[in-house]
Image (cartoon, rainbow, N blue to C red; front, side, top):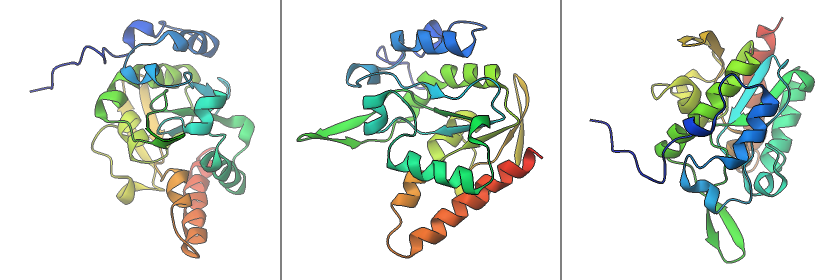
Length: 215
C-alpha cells in the first residue's frame, strides 16, 4: 500500500504548466509549493541550457552555491563536472543541466548549511518538473548523475554501481529514452588522495559513452 500523501508535499503537478517551453517552465517554477523544501531555500534552481541540447545531465539537487546563485552546477562539483564534460568530448552548448529536486535541502550548523540528501517524497514531488523538461528538450541521451537522479528519471530499480557507463534503453510515456547512468561529481570529490584521479577518469569514461552515442 502506498504511503499517504503528506499535506506539505502535494507534488508539483499543479504548478507545472502544460505543454510549456523552457522559458515558461522556468518562469513558473518559483511559485512551486510541491514540497516543503521551498520554505528554507533561497530560491528555486531550475536548469541551464536550451531546448536544442542533445544531452541532459540530471543531478540530485542544488548545493549551497547553486542555491545562492540560482544556477545548477556552479559549485565545486559542478566545476569538476564541466571539466569532465570537456574531456569526454561533449560540446557544452549541446548539454542541458538540471536536477531531480529543484530546492536545496540542508541542515543548519552554525553559519554553515550542510547538504542533506532529498528523500523519496521530495523526488516524487519534484518529478513533474523533470518530466516536463525532458519532454521539451527531448534529448538523444540522458545522463543521471548519482542514485537520486537515476531513481527520478529511470525508476527505483536502477543500480548505478552496476549500470554506470552502460547504455540503458527504456520505454517512457514520451517514447523510447536512452540513459547512461554514472556517479555524481560530488562523489568524486569525496574520494581521498591519489584515488581521486582514478574516480575522475571513470566519470570521464562514462560521459564519453554518452558522447559516442551522439556520433
